[in-house]
Image 1 (cartoon, one colour):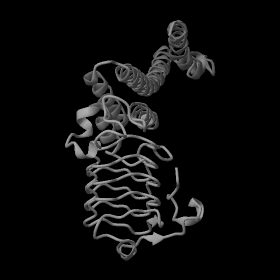
Image 2 (tube, one colour):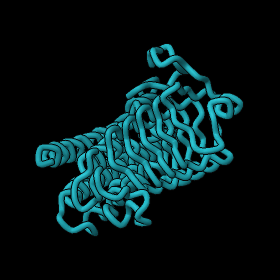
Image 3 (tube, one colour):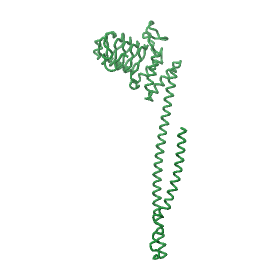
Image 4 (cartoon, helix red, strand yellow):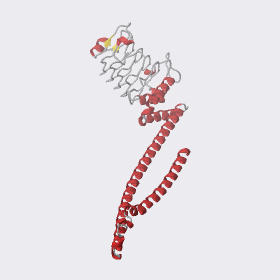
Length: 337
């Protein structure tokens, strides 16, 4: 910034000196050029003896009038050039000012985004759940206003969920051998409200909007989580426990659930198109109005009462052998990850 200011000051000095020199040159031209084009001695030097004094005066006056007229034309030309130059300089100054204003706004915006990201990360490491939730919403806000931070925000949120909700579970959640959380009537928000908030934020948009290949939420304890109406297309929930969760009307197109547990989960009107449902436990789950076009399942998939493999096939799902590999089992987007 200091170097730029010094260079600008030097440029202003040079422009000032150049302007003074130009004014002096133009003044000299305006004064001397008419006399050179229409010299006073021009007519008088031809045959001055034949001219009377009155005629000499008339010739002199006529020459001076020509010089004056020519000088007036020069002044008009110079004035016109000055106006054009002033307009050009004003336009250039306007463009420079505008570019500078845009640059400053961009710098301020970048600084704001960077500070917001740093503060959000700091809040995620706080002990108080309220501060962590505030950090999650800050990341959500940053992803909304800055596309360049969307991938980072999605990575941070998914990492936060994986760190906070591993399977097997840890305190204060009920363990594997205790009464199943899905039967306690308490939701994930009661045990880990910040994890629920992060899931909700991730579900506001698709992974494409977040500018990531896909989001990994594998081997997690997400029992009694609320994913209703969310966008979780392409998310990997492999071997994750979503028992008793609210997944109504959620879009899971292309998601991977292989080995996941969705016991007593409510999947009413959810979209499971192109999902990997192999070895998934759906015992007691609600599948009313669910869509399964292109989804794959196998003999290890456990269905709720009143829903069978035949029902899944009638809904567009495809049964594959237990030995089938993930790459050959389903459509694009269906993986074991």
